[in-house]
Length: 470
Image (cartoon, rainbow, N blue to C red; front, side, top):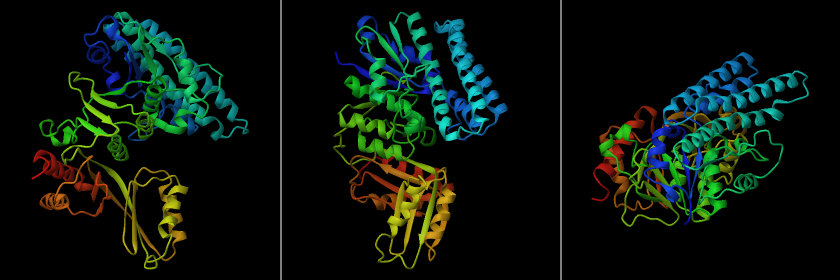
């Protein structure tokens, strides 16, 4: 029997009793429990306090340590101890031995504290540049979150009659230098998926650093790599929600539909919009190996969810999702000397590249080019200043706005733009920009930030709630 590789996100892991009942055990017994590999994330909120808050940027242990704030990182570490032990106690009723779990995580956190103290002493001498030790610090801080949840999961499952096995890829106290593939293959050496249920840390320690390469999306990279290296038949991502035509909190639960089927191209579009269906780099390797990915709601186990495959195209024209980002900046460059000048846009994008800024969309005409970039892009102000110096004759201004995307594998809907424009007009929304490629899989509307949610609702009503083709 071919095996699956399955990933459980942090919010779902925080409700592990329900996950065990709905996903991992779910009425199975005997051999039916196996031929599955589970990759787990840290519990909700843990990585934020270990590193920094993903949404607000509020510093955690790492953020304070990087800023040389000793009182700050010690306070954050103390808070982490409390949070982790609180999680341990919350799982006592489903079989976790709290004393053993507390002892396990205390040893890890004590080791981290000692390591941070040693680094503080070393950097006082001035010969150690932050760039030499901060990346490694971020790595071992991130790792402890997944180790905590994976260890607990194994102990709980064993207490409930499942032959679970911890596959700790965090490299704790290991001095070996290995590649990502080697680390995973070493971790699975001797594992028999037909008789054991591997619970794997989402973090993997390897030579070039998983945080350095993928930052907070690393657990999905681990998930994909394991699927590829072990020859999985399917990858399954268990989330706390379905992949739907729109945000049910905004549109209303009864107004959205589960997508059902889509393809890797659409998964890329969703990733660009900040939708966490699957990390784009993780999806690529699975796409190349033709391993489909299924996104399921961990708390609605009977629903098959959304299958992302390589070749799927909707047999009838339809919109699969209305989504977007309201955290965008439009960098508008107007220059009367631009017209007919080859390479002008290349010079602009070179600045974006030099400052590590990715643009989500672009509009252009004879004398104006606008790049739409995430507001939180680091070094954005420096990039714009560099543009102003390089383009002395240009007028450069920035505008905060939102991008609303209408996405689907087959959107060759007659009169689509007319219907979209009419829906936005009736909602009293002015379209600031429009971006569409010939492939018509992602059509983007730029709107004022205050109109963002209203635009999402208007387009969802037009293309989903009123159905697809008139």
